[in-house]
Length: 330
Image 1: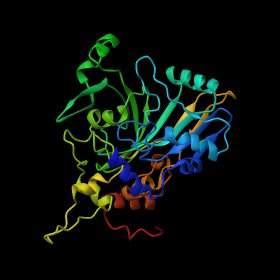
Image 2 (image 1 turned 60 degrees about the horizontal axis):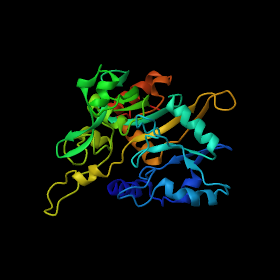
Image 3 (image 1 turned 60 degrees about the vertical axis):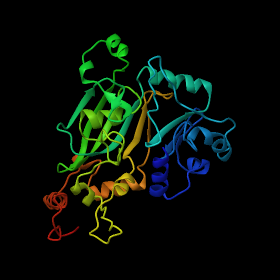
């Protein structure tokens, strides 16, 4: 967590405190508050955690002149499902409740899987299929020298009892390619149907074989910064650093290690909440994420864009890394 916190300070270039949260409220009514949680700030305290959203809520309420301190809309069901799925490395929509009635209602909606959460993820590599559903149990297991969340292909198709007796949980994740840059990278929309800890990261890394950019934990069976193809490093404009011996510069592991996790909770939908219509809460992408999309030439709505032949040719050449100067008007 310390590494993620240092990386967050570098990419955000700002102080993360209660005032920051107050300035990043994206929805508020008498029952609910939604904030655009920054990358690098944990939701809860714990070992090695210096600061968390939970610790800032009292000061946050004072700044916003709320009569009562809001609470995290965080519930665990009887199977141990974590409905926030929001840890230190993830940014985006984080829901708070302002009273017990709202907290109970939101908990029931999460437990009945009525709430839809959509994430945006930049992946290293491109999935074989335009869209699909990953349904593979997850749980703790040994990978190289450490223990982390893993998938168990051999448990696919087994009964709930067999899966739980093995110490695992059924996990379902939907994905769809929004845009891609050759075979180098892609922008994915992710919808977790279940909400298990780190399920999105392990499903993309171990099932799709397309880990999230900046995922230094699930991209390898070794504790090391994510290994990234040279073409992708070039697109990210990461340059080599010369050694003390003055030899030709090369990209160092610490440079790769400073790439933040590109996983953003961009939308939360509460069906027929209060007024009878869906409540849709969306969180803007952070600047570093937008900069990455620009460098990688990825666009969330590319497939819906009506482009002229000139525009299509421009983007085709840009993706190939070729000169676009012959195309007029860009």
